[in-house]
Length: 240
Image: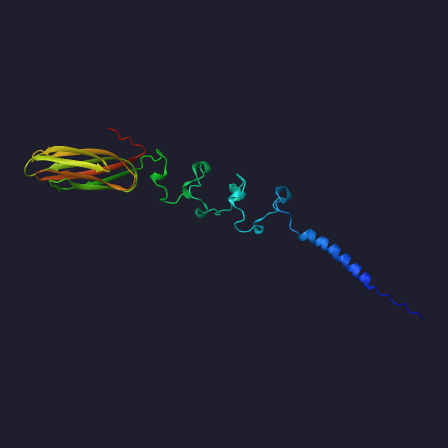
């Protein structure tokens, strides 16, 4: 019986085959792993939805890389934009849609009259102070009642005092003062002739403050039924 012996490939053939495999594999690997030239991938080369959040580095997308009007409300996750992410002065009136800011979106106490445009705030507050008396009226001008104004705004203010005496007749002077504005009046008071002084003043408070009603008399007098009333209004014209 004859035998058939398999002939082994020659070393030259083995080397030639390996070189061919490496050449073919190297070309395929280069096609997959080689980075594209700089600026060669643009919008036209990307499929729709190809670039997703996991494929972006943190802080890779800055304002300079976003087209105008590219980010609309539908593309922003709920609660994604907090106050820390908004630059000072970035949100202006023209960037807020009509009726976008509703009551439930405003924090209590966060908006004061100073934050609103002139004429926006309607008459919204009436404040009063009442002192029954009698309050002794000294010879020097002294406050007999004070009304605290808690919020800035435009105020129309009235003051009243009923003046009496049980001793010498004489004059009494009362002054209603708010900020740099005041109203002052003088009257004659006798035992059988009590008198009422009514005063009014207008003032714009740029911050919280006080209204004082003060009186003085050279002879002993008493102030009774003292009242101060302040009404906040939208507009105020104080001319004279």
